[in-house]
Amino acid sequence: MKISIQSNFRVPGLGKEESVDFDCPGLTLRQFLEKLSGMSPRPIEYVRPGAKTLNPDDWEAEINRIPYQDLPEGLETQLKEGDTVTLKILAFGGG
Image (cartoon, rainbow, N blue to C red; front, side, top):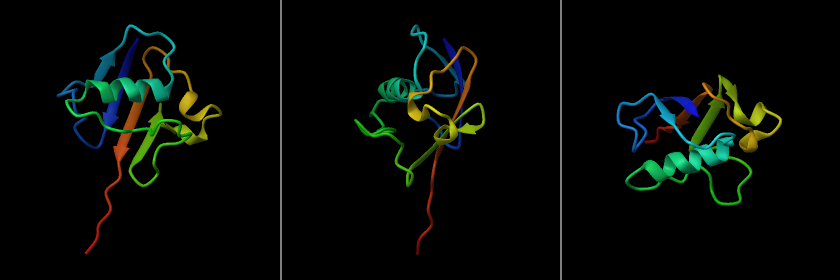
């Protein structure tokens, strides 16, 4: 299953790739983020184990431009071939 990725940072483990191809049909957004984390040299905790949402202070995610929390299944939304997952890291200024 090929999923396109957009982000506001270079996703560790992806290099310059703009998509990933997994041999797992029917991945949920949660599973996708876990697999993406596993591709990184140092795993990234996009989703905390057992959490129902991403940490809103760190991450935003969308599926086909729809915020995941606006979808009925949230993190358990099943991805389809050709979907686009947008992953953003939130940066806060301080001083």
